[in-house]
Length: 438
Ligand SMILES: C[S@@+](CC[C@H](N)C(=O)[O-])C[C@H]1O[C@@H](n2cnc3c(N)ncnc32)[C@H](O)[C@@H]1O
Image (tube, rainbow, N blue to C red):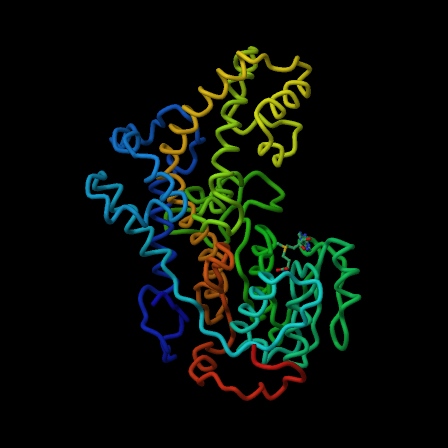
C-alpha cells in the first residue's frame, strides 16, 4: 500500500493503496481542519478546542493506565477499542492511522558496515537506509550526503557502489572525524548546506539520513531543481528554519496560508509515540514534566506568571530530572529569587502533579496529530519531486524501535519498482568492493 510513483506505467511489487498525491491531499485537508488543535498551547486548563467538540468529559475521565498506554503507543492506537470515546474523536484517530500507516520501503541486501565510531543503533539505521537507497546509489555518478555527521552513510555507499561521494556537514569536528575515517573517493566538506549551492545534476543522488527540518526542505528543492535522485529519513521538522514559520513547498489544496505552520508546531511531530526505552524512559519523562508544572506553581506563588515551557529559562532541560528542591533553587536563583521554603515545595509538588495529570489528558488528541504533521511535511516535499518528474515512494526506513524518526522518501528518475522487483540475492552487488551480507 501507500506507494505512489506518479507513473502509471510501472508495475509495483506491493499492493497499492493511496498514492502520494491522494495521501498528500487528504492529510492537507485533515491538518487544515484541525489547525485549532495543533496551534493551541498545551496547558493544564481545559482547552477551548476540546470543549467545542465535547471531548472534555471523556478526556478527563481517562485512568492513568490509559494515558500511560496512549503515551507509549499513541492515542490513535487505543481508540478502536475505546467504545465510549466520542465518535468524531474515534473517526479522527482512524483516519490518522490510515494516513500514517506506511510500509517499510523495500531495499536490497545490506553490506557489513565499518563499525568505527558508530553506535549500534546508528549502524543499524545506516545499514537499513543504505539498503533502501541501493537501487538509486547503483546508478549514481556522485552521491551527496547532506548533514553527513561522522560520514558513516557516505563512506558506506561510496565503498559499496564505488561511487564518488561528498559528505556535507556544518560541524567542523564531525568533518574532521569523518575525514579521518575516509578512504578512496569520499570527501567531506565543512559547509552550511542551507547556503551553499548544492549544484545537483541528474546523475547525482542526494541523501539525508536524519537531516533536520529545513535541511531536508533544502535537499528536496535542490533535487527537484537539479533533477537528481533523492532519499531522506525525516527528523526534527522544527529545526534550522530561518523564520518562525514553514511555508509549504507546493501549494496545498486548501491554500498556502492554511498549511503555513509555525516552527514550534512542527516540533509536535517529535511527540510521536515512543516505545519504552527507545529515547528515554517514559516514566522519568513524566516525572520531569510534573516537576516542571511544579516549578510554574512555585513561580506563581512568588508572583511570576509565565507561559508553559518558560519555567526552565536559563537552566539546562536535563536539570528537570533533578529533585524539585534542587531544580527549584536553581531556577529561582536564576531569576534573582531566594530558595523555596518546605511549604512552598510541598504545595508545588502536589499542585504540579494535579496540573500534569490534567495537562497530559488534554494533550492526547493534539499529540495524536503529531504523526500527521510529520507525514504532511514529508508529502509536501515528496510532491515537489513528483511534480518535477521523479518517481516517488513514501514509507518507513526501519522499524520504529530502531528510531521513531523513520519516515522515508525515495525519489528516483527511474522507477524504484524495477530494482525492487529483482529478488534479493546473496551475491554481492557487481560494483561492491568490500563487505559481506549483513
Ligand atoms: C541528526 S544529525 C544526522 C547525522 C548523520 N546523517 C547520521 O545519520 O548520523 C544532523 C546533522 O546535520 C548537521 N547539520 C545541521 N545543520 C547543517 C547545515 N546547515 N549544513 C550542513 N550540516 C548541517 C549536524 O551538524 C548533524 O551532524
